[in-house]
Length: 187
Image 1 (spheres, rainbow, N blue to C red):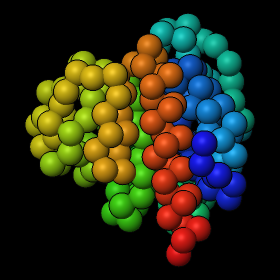
Image 2 (image 1 turned 90 degrees about the horizontal axis):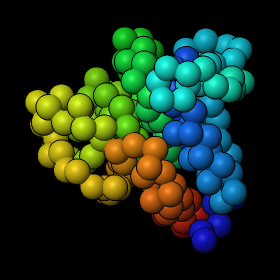
Image 3 (image 1 turned 90 degrees about the vertical axis):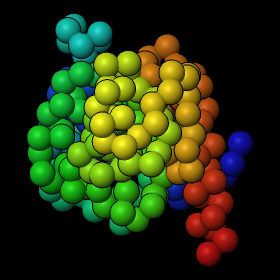
């Protein structure tokens, strides 16, 4: 496993986030030595869900999107759940935050409905990715090539379809962000 000490990754989520898609990537990254920061629309705690309809755990927000800067992070994770990215993509500051990662060509990982944020941030045109199946028309209309695979890596973008893909997704994001950490140490 790559030495990822010093690597800082933002996870952008709000109320309605699919709990396993929030927790498992954070755990995988923290086990690899990454400093993970939960960024959200408001201070306090966010309400996670199980299968979009059952309230589960709550999670402490580290920084609001209004106070977060993409330049402070090495990469970004966009978990799913239906309502989480739907709320986020309606917030101009959240979209600008994601767009800053896209514009800076920083690594981004998105699972399930998370790629909706990438559409609003202009980050899918010309890219190959996967997602929850209901997003495929949205992604294709935004210029992406959608495929039905467990995990897809296209340059500095990693995507997966659903919670069942989390083991492969977590391995792929640790690899992606590990490459970023190695490059940063070489600079």
